[in-house]
Length: 246
Image (cartoon, rainbow, N blue to C red; front, top):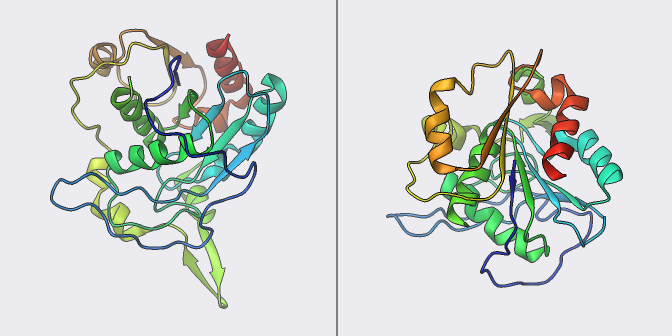
């Protein structure tokens, strides 16, 4: 989780609908080529209304997930904190458009395009796995089981089941998705790294690099939880979020 205390220096382009989705049918925009700036895609999202005085919460799901993964937690935190809460489908996931570009730079660019449109800057980013890495990169740039996840991404079209996921793009970029791009910048804002006590996804050997990039990072472990902390221990997860916001 990363808390931003300063607004980005990005143009404000107006507030979008409070609880609807952009582009419910996937499109295929051209991807960035030859090292040019990634082209953003219009992400599908759901925004729960709340007080504008406090920074909103923005949830970013993991690989093969969707914004629906955080439905219950988003509703509970919106009620408990009174804040606006945004859940987003990453590109090539859920109802967001498909694109051959699946880099973290592209996923960060998508959010840099969306959040100012909705008037959600500054905000608190809460990312799981792939979503957490996207949140990390965005901050640095801007000072259940696998089967269950996959089944939520099947949709019936014209009498047959097809994947919501862009499996070709995910397979092509899987090595990059499982890694994190090398960065020299640092983010000095408050940051919380929340891991499950039974998870092997955040080993102690990663802590020095985390603290180099995020000098104010806090490390917290939720006992008896796997990689999917928010699913295994939702009450502990929400308690950690609210403790971070306090």
